[in-house]
Amino acid sequence: MNFNIYLPDEEISSQRGKPYPALYFLSGLGSTHDNAPQKSGFAKYAHKNRIAVVFPDTSPRNTGIAGISEDWEAGDSASYYVDATNDKTKQFFQMFSYINK
Image 1 (cartoon, rainbow, N blue to C red):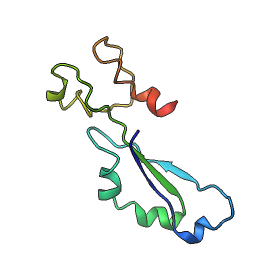
Image 2 (image 1 turned 30 degrees about the vertical axis):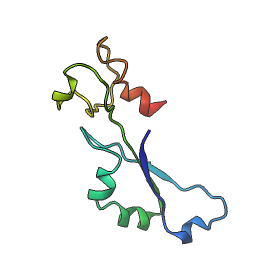
Image 3 (image 1 turned 90 degrees about the vertical axis):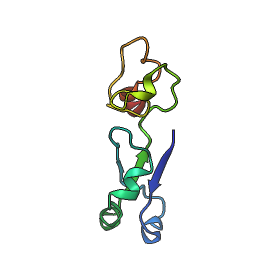
């Protein structure tokens, strides 16, 4: 899994072993682990509230399924946080299980 993690400032990290509260930011259709941290403006709020933010790449990529890369709504890099049941796609599109397990 590719991901980015934002950690609050050094002052907070010196809390001697106390864990950071964490927020997992699940991006939408076609987004990567880089989109939200770069475009959302989250950092000032995460800093103010002293939380870590995890940005996982939640989309299957380069699946090799014939014709799927042309389908932006349900193809490579599409993520709907559900598990596919179609034999053609279920090997790669198991996003509910991927995020929750």
